[in-house]
Image (cartoon, rainbow, N blue to C red):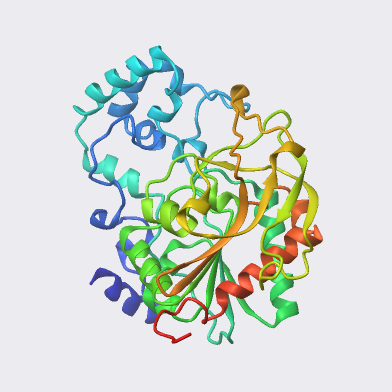
Length: 374
């Protein structure tokens, strides 16, 4: 109801007082979920009461283990939005003890109205103005980042997508507003491309609108960081739309040359890629192969051609290591490529072709429609 009122007011050029950041907390993920070691670190840092618990029970979490900052930034984009104390404390006996203490103490912290409002401030509820005319196929490029933002990656991807649109004759719109995920606006697009999106970025109603549109026949294409968060707070997105959960990438060194094997050389997405190619990238590993979830693997990595050693010397070999895949989600289509950290990847002929043809497939209204007789 509130969203409908907002649309009506915006159409008249009037922005309601609550549209600029005072959110309906009933629509805000985690707004009323009690604190624990599984809460986003950011939520604990911005609430003085929860932060005092961290300072007392796990002071080491306040120190950033990488980068020049002495403490975690508390305004998005920030790594603190995509990490939890539980994740940071995993792996040691001392960490397990600290986690238990945190859970006990955090459960006693009362969620005050101001803390809830601050917790919800990273979401937006005012949809962007769409062009009066969007010719089909129409592509929405979404690049909101609350977690980790690598500016060069986002910018290089956007330029590549704009070049594709010009070459292919697509209508294209780029937005970092989660509020564009509503039934009215989504109906004007054939495919949504998540450009290195990181962190939780959609309210509950925005999630529902996106899922309903996608499962009803929409298309999704996810690039690299859009499947690269160490923790997710929307299971459907990670487990069904992406179909894999990130576990790490090499650090010795971070960017390595590896052999990419084309597993589906006869498919429309992989047409013209040959049987293999080599390139240098930040190679993602996942907790398990998405192949086990029934996806169509398009390309995989030959792990013998690079060193899959992550942070702290962790072995992140997968054995079966898909790097790009597609699948149906209801009547909709989902394509994901884990390639895309280095700006050079958007100039590399094979990875660029894979991305472009993946978007074309995702935008196509056929192939996943269960009501169509084959």
